[in-house]
Image (cartoon, rainbow, N blue to C red):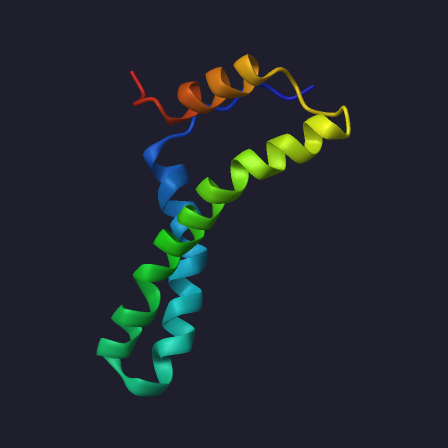
Length: 85
């Protein structure tokens, strides 16, 4: 069994690094301005898609009988995104 992991600022930076790299590669053909335009919005788009899909994914897993109670999921989300003390 793995130990619970508390999200830190470095975890967030690492999570954003992949989409930033993809955006930079996409924008590389047109110069530095295109890199900025291609790489900066991508992490925001992925975070937005995740936020929009989370309820639907929870509903689907609950219909299959595999989801934990909603209260546990809500507590886990709030605990993971709370500032580290």
